[in-house]
Length: 284
DNA sequence: ATACGCCCCTGGTGGC
DNA sequence: TGCCACCAGGGGCGTA
Image (tube, rainbow, N blue to C red; front, side):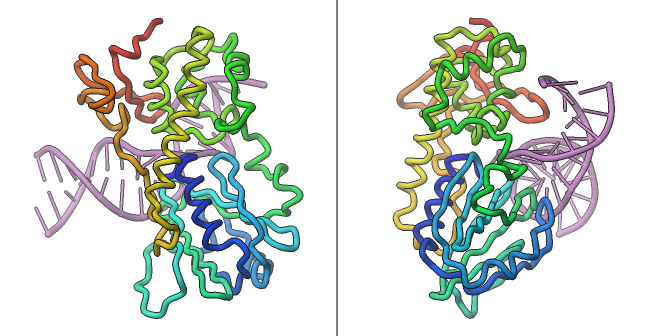
């Protein structure tokens, strides 16, 4: 479910509901997600104040008093359920972790496939964490520029789809938004990065930023308030222009139209890629 | 040092 | 209904 915009929106929801609150209890219903959950969370978290939230790529950081941070990744199927402590709540399947605060806020972490991750780290050493240390630039940050991307692409033959998915290069783009960004920039997903013109690189950087900020804006507006009893945010606008539209016309019907015979689906490094064969020709 | 499969795991969907 | 193959937003890791 979550790529950068979804993670950002989940984090904002957590911030609104939990920042400033004191943790009362932690329940680990399962000892492991992708990796073991450090059991010392049970000792460390209670009585600490939730000071701040941050996002790094697709990771959420929850910073606590006393110099501890909780690191959270939602994997493919992770969801954060935010609500109030209740009595007759039906149990939620795959709710592996529950954190409650003194004033009754309840956060459940649901993750059926358990590709997600949860860890406890010292706030001062967040950047040294093995999962964060090698992360690339934030695509919405000032460091992600045409110059940066052109330098990274120079002389390399990696397919551009794979390069954009590489979290060590750019942190936060996933399969859907990469397809959408390549479509907006009119670049074929199999193009070797070293062959992409400077103008196209520039368009690609802008397309990445646009596609992410559009989705964040849609996510924020779809949450009227953050007092929803669940974190079921999913993908906000399902109006993808190419993703999931194999055989259908590309674009968003209104603003764009194309005579293409339909969106094409190919598989690159084991994952589906969708693109328009007319607007994203193999050479340019 | 880079690149590519493999694998982790559960659930939904569509065909027979 | 049942069974089965296939697919799914991620990403680390071992092997070449």
